[in-house]
Structure formats: structure tokens, C-alpha cells
Amino acid sequence: MSNEDALISSKDAAPPMVRTLRGVVITGASLATIICCARLYVRAVVVKSFGIDDIMVIFALLLVLMFAAVSVALSYYGIGRHSDDVPQQDLIDMQYVAYISYCLYLWVGAVVKSSIAVFIMRVFPTPTIRKFGLGLIIFLVIFAISGELPLILQCSPVRAAYDVNVQGDCLSPDTLFAVQVYQGVVMIIVDIYLFILPIPTTWKLQMSKQRRLSIIGLFSIGLLACIAGIARLPSLVYTNGGDFTYQGAVASIWMNVEFALALIAGSLPSLRVILKFIPGMVSENSHGITTTETNGRRSTGRGGEDSSSGAIHLGATRSWTSKMLGKKNAEITTLHSMETDSREQIVYPGRLD
Image 1 (cartoon, rainbow, N blue to C red):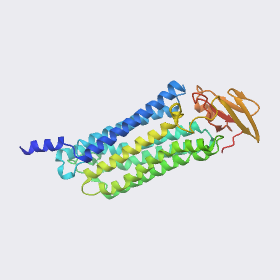
Image 2 (image 1 turned 45 degrees about the horizontal axis):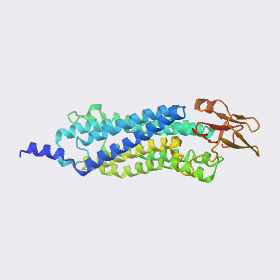
Image 3 (image 1 turned 90 degrees about the vertical axis):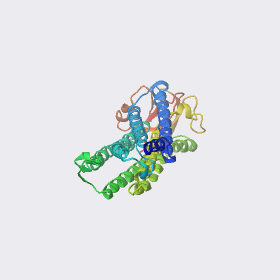
Image 4 (image 1 turned 45 degrees about the vertical axis):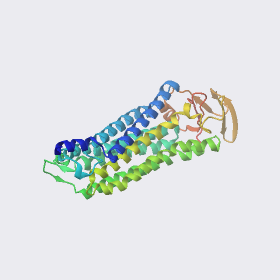
């Protein structure tokens, strides 16, 4: 057998790390797609209330799938193999695909996390959450733009960053490593921020403790994305070493897991039609009866408008933006769902801030 035939045979037989990379990335992307599509179906068909957060989830899902495709493509150019086993031409091609991956990471993360922030703002349209949610989105946009610059412009000319045949003046590996660690730490902090953001408001909702804990538990799934981000950091240390093609697979796996889990965590709370079978996740008032407490007075009613308590039930066809901006002092005090989980209760004046 010639050396060329041996090389082709070796390349066709993917080593364990390559198979792991492809399996994890494809599985994560598939699960995220299923959950997001189910969420979009519930919102558009069942609840009939398709909002800005749902549109953002579509863009986020497309970016996550694009990132997953790039990661799988990298596995065909040497990522997941030991660098000594990768042909020189594959290393050259891999450099270009890896450059695309580096440039995509921040934007994918920013859009995914922004979609979760907008979702939280829709579910809990209080002034405090609106303020901190918008602040986070603005920060993510600025962070993504500023963070892209050192990655895109790491070499002069830019082509030298991904073409080994072009000579240029580039940032040192230590500098690029520091940039990646910094960006990874910021993304972890954002994940923790998103988890904490709705907890105070959720805890003040007028529902049983079990149901409040269940809602918080749904949001806590996002912490798994945070754990994936933390797990990625040590792989950056080794990626900066000699066998970068092999260790690069570890970083790629954790990045894809992080994005997939974040999308899933942001979509699960919208699947109330399915999640109602989980104990504590279904409204205790199965007949649409709501109980409101305003200024120490307690009142009970069904649907419509309760003028005595100042409670107004908004149908699902109303834009969530109007709920957020239509009344200056409006606050969500109860997230009651009737049968389709399509109504929210707003009480004046607000009491959750």
C-alpha cells in the first residue's frame, strides 16, 4: 500500500475524538432545533402570540446551526486529530475554517443570550427587568463588536491570519489566548446574570412555592450552559500548546454545548402546553380563576377585567411590547395561563419592583 493510500485510509477512519466532536455537535444542534421549533409552534399556533423574542430565537437558531456546521467541517480538516497526523494541506484549509469559527463565536453567543433576555422581558415586563434586560442587550452588542476587532484584525494584512502563505505582522499567541479567556469569562458572567435576573420577580409571584421553584428550575437549566462555558476555559490553555488540532476539538465541543443548552433553556419555559404534565408547572387555577391582592385587599375573578382590583387580563394577540411600554407603572404580579397559557395579569400600581 502506498503512502497516499495509507493516508486516505487513515483519514477515512475517524479517531475517537473526531467521532465525539461530530456526535456531540450534531446531537446538540438537533435537540436545540427540535426544542426551538416546538417553542415556535406553540407560540405561533397554540398561543397565537408570536413576539420579538420568537423572531430572535429564529436568528439565534440559524447562527447556532451555522456554528455547528463550521465545527463539523473542521473535523474533516484535522480538528480532533493529533497534529502530527494531519496533512499540511488540511492544516492550511483548517486555518481558514477555524478563523471563521473564531469570528462567529461572539456573535452567536450575543444573539443567543439577547434572545433569552428579550424572552425574560416579555414574561416579566417590570421596569426593573426591562431596564436591566435592555442594558444587557446593549452591552452584548458593544461587547460583540469590540471583541470581534482583535480577532478579525489579529494580523496585518488580515489574510495572514488564515493563510500561511501570506507573511504579516500578527498578535502573539499569548495575546490571542488572553483575548479568548477574557471573552469566555464575560460570557460566563452573562449566563449567571441571565439566571439571576428573573428570580426576584418570580419569587414575588402570587402562586405556590412549589410552582415558583419549578419556574426557577426551568431557568436554572441555563446554568448548564454556564458550566459548559467554564469547562471550555481549560481547553483554551491546551489549545495554545503544541497539539492544537486535538485540543481544539475539546474547545469546539464545549462551545457548541454551551450554545445548544442556552437555546434549549430559553425555549423550555414557552412549552407550557407540554410542561403542564410536570408537577407544579400547571396553574393551580384550572378554570381561569385568578386571585389578586392590591393594597391589602384580596379579590377573585374570572378572565376579563376586574375593576375592583385593578387587574386587567390581556389576550394573547396583544403585542408584548404594548404591555411593556403602554402603562408606566404596570407590573406583572401573576403569570396565569388559562388553558392555552396565553394571558398575563397586570396590576396597578406595580408591587414587584
